[in-house]
Image (cartoon, rainbow, N blue to C red; front, side, top):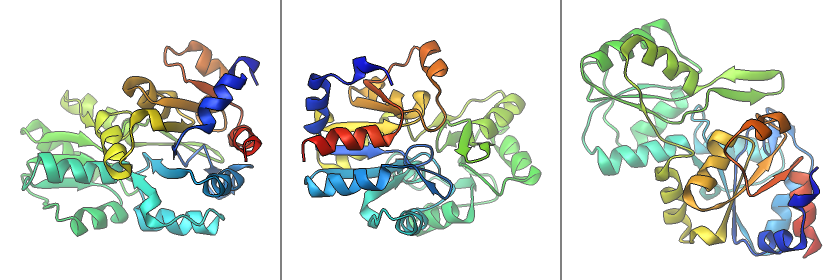
Amino acid sequence: MEKEFLTLKNHSELKNKKLFVLDMDGTIYLEETVIPGAVEFINTLREQGKDYLFFTNNSSKDGTMYVEKLNRLGFYAPPEKIMTSGDVTINFLKTLRPGKTVYLSGTPALEKSFRENGIPLTDENPDIVVIGFDLTLTYEKIDKMCHYIRNGAEFIATHPDVNCPVEKGFLPDCGAMCAMIEASTGKSPKYLGKPQPETIEAILRVTGLHKEDIAVVGDRLATDIALGVYHGVTSILMLTGATSKEDLAASSIKPSYVFDSIMDLYKILKEGA
């Protein structure tokens, strides 16, 4: 890895962070495979009295499902340590669009979260169309969304990711689904999740911390790293997911730090243990 990212000054800054906001897909695991050093990193944060928050743009699962997966993989994270783009979207609707009816294109897990939070869902003439990372997407859903959006419904997406990294490569994600709808309707969605300001606001509100206390860790330049770059928060890129060194060189979005994997970050924090 590049030595300029490993100065003692930089190490000191990272050791002083109070909260690490961690992406999951491509950062601490790939599907069912834990990335080496990830569990040790979380354990070191606990030992040093630091905090952590798992934040994923993947809105196909709810917090309960992520808790189950993280526990199965050895992270043992409680529900309050999980936040998704679906949670940010629900908060946005409850606070800024109260009472508005929603047509939701999402998985059963996302629909369950919306209903539990009192979001009024409908299949007819909604005020708002919301699309997530919908692994149950059908042509019927696409047709309905396009029809409602053409007729004036507001268009909201839980997050902008075009692809979701998996062990075999990538799956088409929410952003790719939105591109299809946008091509048909001519309307662009309001994206939530990373890197939108609603996400950093939600993190600060939940943790009670300030921007300078936080580091964002992830594998995507346009979402994880941009969340930090756009909002004045330290950002740490991991090269274990969606971004290659070539991608980084070609991008205008530059992280505060770059590491081959979370093992490198674990070793840095462990030095001060």
